[in-house]
Image 1 (cartoon, rainbow, N blue to C red):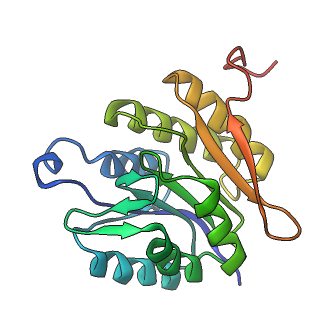
Image 2: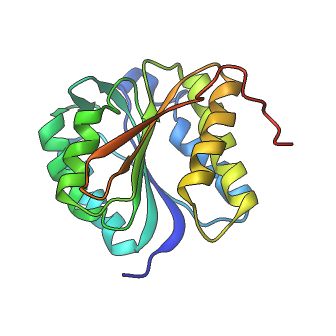
Length: 203
């Protein structure tokens, strides 16, 4: 299946965060400034997540970016918690030959990646290794997408993603988990940045 190198953003927050903390919307705006054609959806329920995941599949967009609260065993929408297994069952079927970026705390784990890779041909899963503040997160992701599409507007290689995630993570002193599948569809973890003294500018 041929996919379009664009970002589809799904965001969900707590009620008292909705006016001031929509980082997904800011990522959308920064991508528009760069001449891209992202799509942005704000949701509050599990059912809405399921609906817009299907919309993402139909869009043929290549990159799914989910911005929400997370925990070690799953993610949360405004009104629902989704345990890891339920989240995998929701997103994995639409991730064949696509990539998943999670702007969540704690949820980007080896168990999550293994669950997705074992049930789809997803190319990669990436997200913060631990907890992360909204201001750091929006800087990280807008920087990442800016660097990626400035380098190549038509696609993302594994090497490019790891390099630019590392640069963006260094800006806010955070760590990222990047998972790619082995030939046997087992998750291979890269912890980014690999070294704290990685330079921000390539020589």
